[in-house]
Every structure is written in structure tokens, then in C-alpha cells.
Figure (spheres, helix red, strand yellow):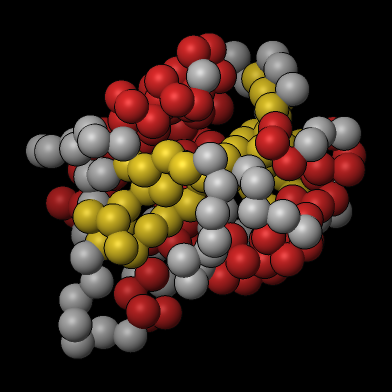
Length: 187
């Protein structure tokens, strides 16, 4: 059993924000796979695709750990069975990066997960949303909607990210890292 957590902020106001690319990913995964309808729990919304649970925290980004610890307990999975998908401003738009573990890199949603579950030993799939322009605050940048051009690119990136997760689930983490960490999606 695996749990794939897409990070984002709940509500239509944030739907196309750069910070919501994790939610966009789980929506795309659900669209392409045989998954159940979304079901609502207290701290998260989930869908089941065979032996994979897709999760969207109902908390705001900086409190994602509350939802992740709850779904970890509800689904009885270890931290190594969790894959977190989130935005990365340090990665160019069009790039993916898979890591087995690590720090938060300053991402508050990720730091919240580390704080609540008590470890950094979970898989991460980072989706690039950068680079951030020099003249804008980071919080403002990630809470802006993608531009039309970025959305066209992100649309392709999400398909590639689904492929990456398929490889992780079926052929292992090392194979997925070797194939997708150097891959760049271009228009």
C-alpha cells in the first residue's frame, strides 16, 4: 500500500497557484488511473487507485503534516510508503526531481510533514515552478497563478510525473530517479 500526498492549499482561490502543483498532480493521476471518487475525511480528501491512496490535505500548505500524520495512521502505512509531491521554486519549470529522503529545503509544507511524522524518510517528487523573479517575494510568487505558457508546460510535466510514479511503483525508486531526474519537459 502506498500513499501519494499532493501538497497545496484547499479551495478554488488557490486551484491554479504554483504552490498547488501537488494537488494538480493527484488530480491528473486520478484522471489517468482507475480511482474511486474523492472521499472527505476530517483533515484530508482521498481517492483509492487499487493499492494506492491519493491524498490532498484539507489543511493549508504550512500545516500539511497534520493531514499526513492522520492519513498515515488511518491507512496504517509506514513513512517509507509515503510519496509527497510538491512544488520546488529552485527547480526550473519543466523539471522533476525524485529523492528518497532529505531536509525541507525551506519548503514549509514539507517541514510540517517532517515535524509531525518525526522523520524525513519518505519519498519526494519535486515539480519545478522556478525560477522566481528577483523583484517578487517568494510567498507572493508561489501564490500566483501559473501563466498561460507555464500551464501548457505544467500540463506536460504532470503527465511525465505520473509516468515517474508508475516507474517508482512498478520498477523501484532507483530506476525512476535514473530516468526522470535528468529529464526536462519542453514546449
